[in-house]
Length: 150
Length: 259
Ligand code: HEM
Ligand code: SF4
Ligand code: FES
Image (cartoon, rainbow over all chains, first blue to last red; front, side, top):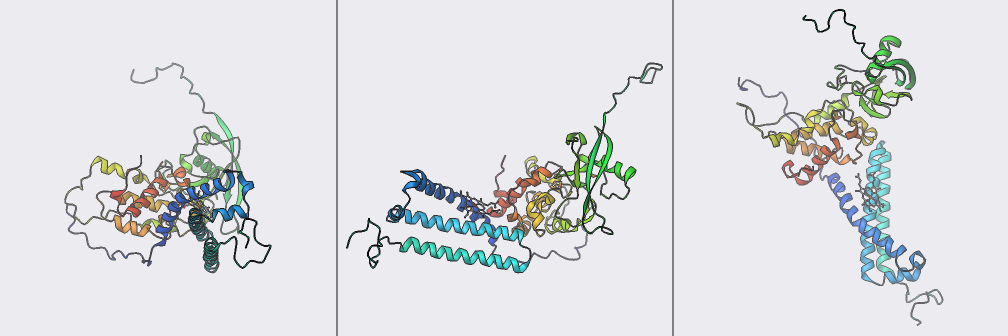
């Protein structure tokens, strides 16, 4: 018996509606790749801030000023900020997609996540790169003791 | 002479199967009467060889004929009696009472995430719709004048996912599916895997495209509830992970086999 006699199906297969870009795959990949970076970045951050040297007691304004005097920590903290914030925001997006069914609520929550992430990224980056512990025009007596006396 | 047991010889008494009383607490729902499901308990005298399905039969046949549930084969083949037994998705016909803690009541309810119709019966249509959506049939361009040959290794590649009986235990065990009914679900992905990794099939890209979707494989969060639930012992989570890998690498051939 051959299959010569089988007629063509009544309706042919219609491909599913195409979305422009498939963010879901990239989101999934990003969570895993950023997770790898975050392990190093977060534990490095925690160790240097809380464990090494005099431990947590050495954290003060001067400690932060000291860190931001070196490009190493500026780059480290920038990476930590961007990786962790986008990672956290994408994770929250997943959770909203899971639980927020009403279209309006979902849209509101997703927008809130996007806006707060962008604001925090801009603010955080601004702080890291414009941080100056001894601004030139500061009022007398407001500067920390380690600043050079004018 | 031909009889196996000599006449007059005392028949050796067969050790009686011990019996015990079990309490089943069943989540009942009658759409004609109830607005909300409610729990009802039944005490039944059962034997050590009995399964949850036998207890349900006993209740239906001797205590309350209105108890509704699906079953057909009663031997783990048809996949019609998946239900939540003590919080885990199981086939009633494959769950022996003696394997449960019968000193406590046994809770039985319908599987979650699909519309409840009556007692232990849910509407399976959404489940089968997503199964159909992955096109679970062989796509081959050549006309089969003779059998399509396949090596033992090639057949082995997708052996695990051929075992599915479409009981929905996996799909309805997943917290993602409970909250997001749009998710294609595990059984659909398992059955797509069965063809994606079949060397005779030519439709892998079509199915990978379908599952590379907002509601496709990326919804999976590796909870492993599905692997625990599958009555056929299919490694459902692993199958989903392999489909993810096939999408990432662009083709099922590039997915290395994890042992
Ligand atoms: C040690 C560093 C970290 C690693 C290795 C890591 C890894 C991951 C991975 C792989 C996922 C995806 C889980 C899945 O899809 O099943 C995830 C989800 C998530 N992560 Fe992280 N992460 C880390 C740090 C963080 C930090 C610092 C935050 C907060 C800013 C965060 C917030 C989230 C959230 C909200 C989710 C979504 C949870 C969910 O899907 O249910 N993670 N993480
Ligand atoms: S994969 Fe297992 S649990 Fe899921 S439908 Fe098939 S047989 Fe049932
Ligand atoms: S009744 Fe057929 S699988 Fe249980």
